Structure formats: structure tokens, C-alpha cells
Amino acid sequence: MNHDIRQVADVTIVLLDTEHLDASNSKEFRASVNPILESHSHVVFDMSKIAFVDSSGCGVLLSCLRELNSRGGDLRLCGLSPQVRSLFELVRMHKIFNMYESADEAISSFG
Image (cartoon, rainbow, N blue to C red; front, top):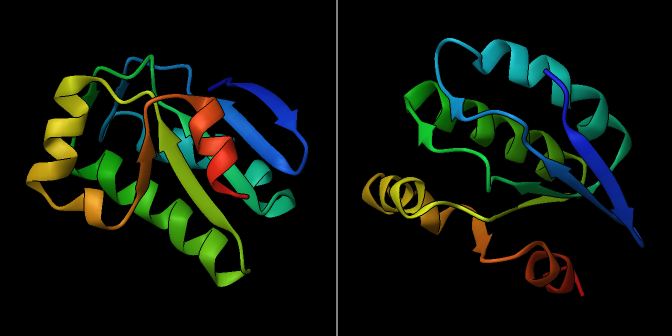
């Protein structure tokens, strides 16, 4: 799984290049972002291309957040579709993740 990656100061923005994050691709997703998580501490996942997330997708995102937090880093999410945002609110993930409308807002949140 390939992702578009760009760097703004000390923040790494990863445009997740998939329409769904679910049981069918969560392991592949994790393997593809693992090198990014290992080498950067401030990461933004731009989820603007993702239309569907299931429990496996939620789990892999939480795993990414925990890994960064364990090393003093953090993960922000941006560009969530209304459907994905609704799911995150339903399962209370909006209480765990910092979510923003745009990558610029997410970048600014790192201060």
C-alpha cells in the first residue's frame, strides 16, 4: 500500500491512499505505515480518500496512536468523511483522536 507523504517542519503528513480501511487491508496498512511511525514523532493521517472504516481499521489506527504516544509522539487525523466521522463519534474514538478538517489545521495543532 503506497501513501503520499510530505513533510512540513517536524510534522509528517501521510495521505492514506485507500478507499477503505478494514479487515481486508488493515495488516497491509500497518506494514506500510510502520516505517513512517518508527522514524517520525508528529504524524498526521489525511483520511480524505477513505470512505469506510470497520473495527479492524479502528484498531489499526489506535495501534498507530499508541506506538507514537509510547515514544512521546502523537498522531492527528484530518479530512474524515461525514460517514467516517459519524462512526468515530459512535464508537467514541473522537475522544481519543485529535481530528481536524484539514491538514493545515492538524499541522498547526502541534504548535
